Length: 287
Image 1 (cartoon, rainbow, N blue to C red):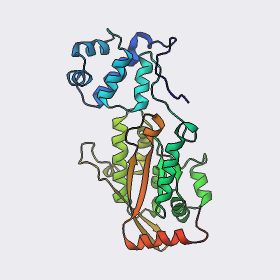
Image 2 (image 1 turned 135 degrees about the vertical axis):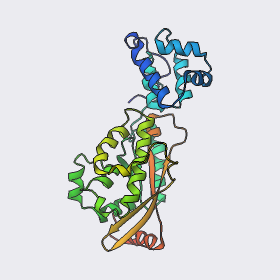
Image 3 (image 1 turned 90 degrees about the vertical axis):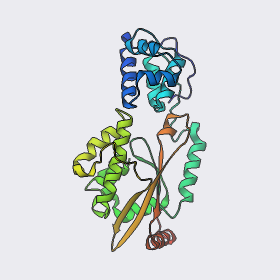
Image 4 (image 1 turned 60 degrees about the vertical axis):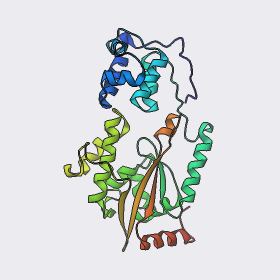
């Protein structure tokens, strides 16, 4: 994957007639509900010039594309896409999670997961796939679903956090709080999809919708989503009561890091706290 690209490549040219660039600019402006006038003010450019860019009558400089991207607060991956449509090289690197470029960030993530023991924690990518997890999460999953079933559900080995909860072959039957948990997860997914057209969240939402009644999908203009999500699981004759929080990197300059999120579970009652500690103390606890 690329690391850095600070100059436009001489061989790169805008797409024919600039149609893709114009379409992307209009789409992002509409997604952000920003008028040309407001965007021009934010980007420090005249509305006339911005209009010319959207009409294809003016070709924006690399600096102008970056100013517009910043003014629209669009993700780094989409900024690279805009740069490419304007004929410039990508600016923001997309390092492999297991590569040397972001080794320190990966080590920091691993420390966060380890320090969260004996409570479950995972790192998710932009598709909600679990790319890192701590031992507590492995133990919890082992108590909820057997390995053969897990392999059948995810033959490529990429466990998906949301599919695991929503799929009837996953742990859905054990999610006691499904009627409360599912709407909050879908609302989060819907907002991600609405904020980034064409993102994996949009695809995943279409996949999960048949598994959830319409009443589980709040309108996009509903009240802000609660900072925590309840998750109650029936495990044997016991019920684990957890609440989950979501954390992201604050100001990443790498596409991969920006798209990661850390999902951490905390006990919601003393019985759950004691059970998680007991699992962690067992000699055969999953490593």
